[in-house]
Image 1: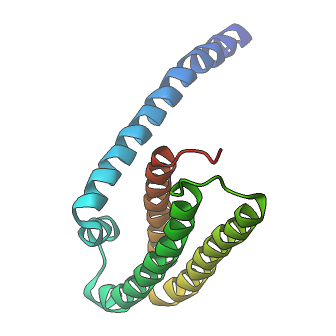
Image 2 (image 1 turned 180 degrees about the vertical axis):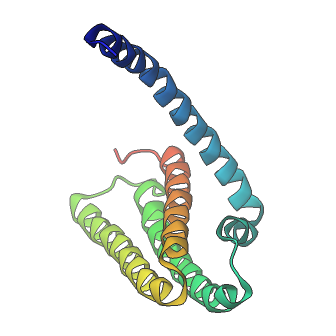
Amino acid sequence: MNRFGIAFVLAAALVAAPGAFAQDRLGDATDMQALRAAVKTDKRAYVASVLNLTEAEAKKFWPIYNAYQLTLDRTNRERNLVIVDIVGSDKPLTDAYAKYLLKDMIEADEAEIRARRTLQNKLVKALPAKKAARYLQLESKIRAVQAYDVAVAIPLVK
């Protein structure tokens, strides 16, 4: 192929790439909407369908999953209490109280990160690496959808 042919193929690829990229991004948005709906219906069943675990893998995975979900529930409750304190009060938020609440929010975030590290360490011992990575990625997407839903519902501090 001559230089003109190569240049033409490259130019065509560059012209087509943004459309393909936009289509992939649109597919991701739709997938996130489907993820939101599936998780609201039955998160555990959705995780099971995505991971397609063998019986032996499931025996190791589900206790780890359950422990992680309990930790997430606890950190979510802690974070939600802080959010309610921030936006739920009729009184103006003082700077001193805001600093105290910010510290609590960061502590809840750090507790979640510690739980994710513990989860990762347990998963790599219990599952093949690809399935462990797939679950961590899936859980991250689920957490992102949930965080977005919370962010949309909570007004900024005035």
